[in-house]
Length: 183
Image (cartoon, rainbow, N blue to C red; front, side, top):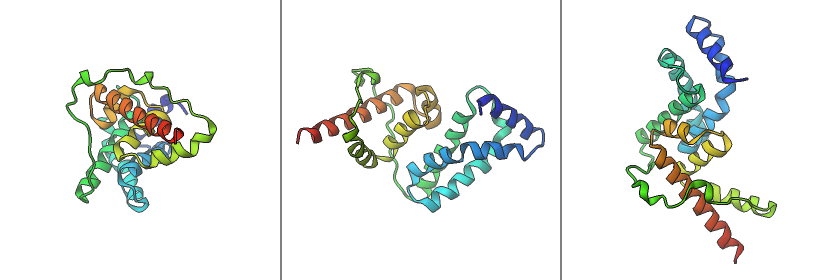
């Protein structure tokens, strides 16, 4: 269903139809879980936090301003709830902040990530070795097709930091894959 249907469900929910929110939960539960799990790593905790995300979203629905896509708003809640949980449980999560925009020498789209079928297994292995924020960033961009602007809102970092992180992570993957090919 389209985001128009999201808005209809939100308006129905705000009008008192609690069942309309179940559409939202069914539609986004796997993506919310994916975001949370990229940060938290354990299945049980990820499930609990994902449920908390929907409870918080439901309670905060009146604050949704329809200015961005609903998914962006929801993913932002998921990301911040996962980070909050990690911090409370003394798990460490790092982000890049205040990076000089001049450090970005190339546009992120300049890195070519065309791989042969033989490299898919190696790519999956390398992806599993990425840091939490790198894996989440790639998942938001490639798996969930969020724009750089949406990722900026979700992760609460600047657009230039999203571009820098995407560039560096893609370059890191490409370098590792090319190095492994040359062995």
